[in-house]
Amino acid sequence: MGMNMDRLPNWTINGTARSNGGDFNKVTIRGEADVAGDVTCNELKLMGTLKMSGNLRMKLSKIMGSADVDGHVHGDDINVMGELRIKGDCNAETFKSRGTFEIDGLLNAESVELRLYGPSRVREIGGESIQVKPHFRFLSGGFRKLTVDTIEGDDIRLEQTSARVVRGNRVDIGPGCDIDLVEYKTDFRQDDGAKVGQQTKV
Image (cartoon, rainbow, N blue to C red; front, side, top):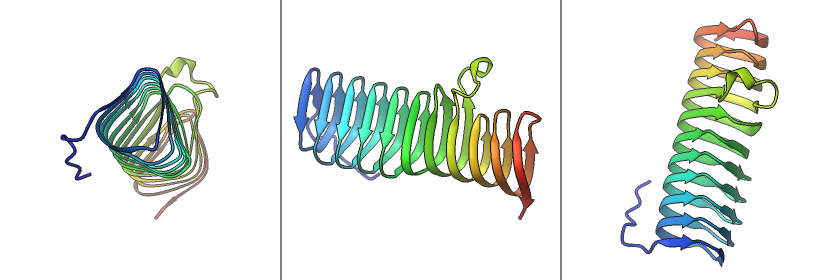
């Protein structure tokens, strides 16, 4: 993201704090933070609760608690191990989730790796490599499911995903998927345990 912010102050919250946001080097939240504005930082480590009315920009992040962002999220490396809710878009180089998330807008990242611990929802996903599967396959069922309108990428491998449209070069539709339309350029594979309404080579 081109940020050189090592000389900025760190912000550590162990209890409850309210802030108008700002620019920081490292942000560590173990308690509850309520931010009425934008936050830009090199590193975010969230073990508590973060509520924001603005935008969040960071290079590295570990979200082990709960983050609720009314604006957009930008990051180089976003790692979700708790809960993430975004009302805007999420743009990243790498987006990994081993928790749950809800994104009202677009999730755009070069690499998207989702291990579903519970139900997650996003309007659209765009990226080069997109992989979705439940964390515990033998306990997947309908609880660990991704709901999305459109997925577009180069290499797409999906399990336990419900989508209207999936577009990609190489598309692998695995068990537990329910896809209305698949458009692929080079390779397409469908598991016996998947439903695909229509598949077209373009």
